[in-house]
Length: 113
Image 1 (cartoon, helix red, strand yellow):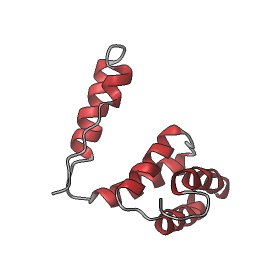
Image 2 (spheres, one colour):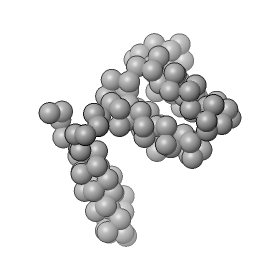
Image 3 (cartoon, helix red, strand yellow):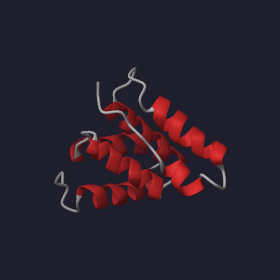
Image 4 (cartoon, helix red, strand yellow):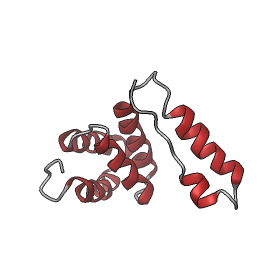
């Protein structure tokens, strides 16, 4: 079993303002869903990057999930292949934007940092 994923961002950022949303974020989305062992964490990271990219949400959340993917073993070569593949289905301009984030995470030269 992999190390259990624990998330506190919901409570840290919205705990007093929206405690129910914070609970769903930290305890259900990350606590239960991300710790479900039916899909390994590396694959789950790749699926998440794909889903966010497909929506065109190219911001902090996507950058966080690209970093999370890297931290769970997704190589630079794999993330580049993922972005390229999804570009054909989700849109070429989205891929350009996501590559900029991926280069920030993995490094300009493409080496796995």
